[in-house]
Length: 150
Image (tube, rainbow, N blue to C red):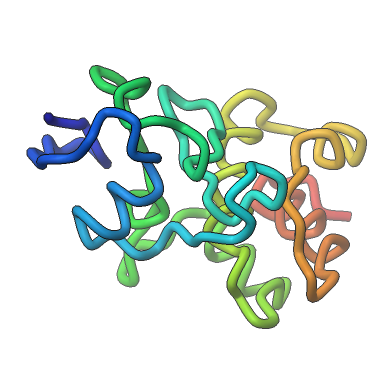
């Protein structure tokens, strides 16, 4: 099989019903995407598939063949962080950090669709769960990245 991940073609062997999350983590050794709940409820495993936030823990790899996949590894770099990653740091969003890659991928999809989101837009798009309770900081970081910070 092959997937387009972060603009690169990845060749691998896996069962077609293997969840994308496990292909990324266990087969391709891309560990930025996290396992949280395994039932698409928490969002720690969120990646973007053709630009849409997608819970990879329940997505069979066969369903994403031929699609563009973006993981946290493809969002930005240490030398050139994505505007959201810089905003996350500026707003001190991460606490334990476990859910952050999924949050960032959902936020990136939101800003692509709505470059200047309202609080309601952010609240509707960010269904990821953060046990540390940094949701207010997430909202502030998204506003900062969008240039709409108060």
